[in-house]
Amino acid sequence: DQQVKQNSPSLSVQEGRISILNCDYTNSMFDYFLWYKKYPAEGPTFLISISSIKDKNEDGRFTVFLNKSAKHLSLHIVPSQPGDSAVYFCAAIKPRGAQKLVFGQGTRLTINP
Amino acid sequence: EPEVTQTPSHQVTQMGQEVILRCVPISNHLYFYWYRQILGQKVEFLVSFYNNEISEKSEIFDDQFSVERPDGSNFTLKIRSTKLEDSAMYFCASSPDPVGNEQFFGPGTRLTVL
Picture (tube, each protein chain N blue to C red):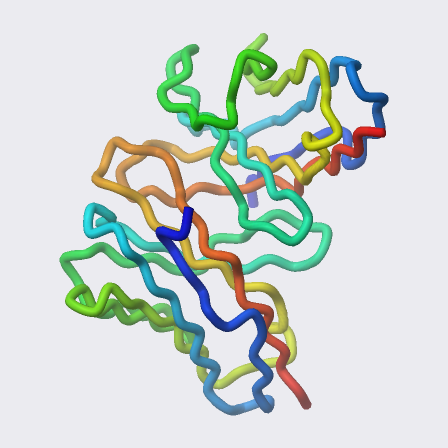
């Protein structure tokens, strides 16, 4: 099941610079997208989401961009901080009322001082 | 800040044994979920639960699995006869309602089947 794909298993960014994490999806029925962050030995923590009726959503240092025609979304973190080092999961969900989150494989982000 | 809790943090069992994984969702949430993550693989949806019944389940969630909300606070996942391939991290999640769709996850239970 490759409906949601994160093609970069890892990303290394210098502290203070921008981190860009990418996610592609294949199912055009998805209409809501979420980013979760996960530290070792913890559960995924919700970060930010976006509805398919929008192309951008911003929350502090985190911005998610959605390109529906390309079936692509990205998470921008600026400026990146050491505490941002974690695994980031993209997830998608079909129309409201459905409850199944479909996750990507995750990207391990490392912020270097 | 309210959070989802799970017990135990680590469960070791013999193949063929029954295990019950426990979760306490956030108190005003109405929708409850179980996911699992086999080592090195994606987080996978197992089941969702609302109003005391299963509302959606995946093909993974076969007759060996069951869920229950035995009281007003706990939400459990039972695996009747564990197999080696059931070894994984099991995450419980809850949400206030499906609109908005943000699900809040617990820390997980690591199940090891020997």
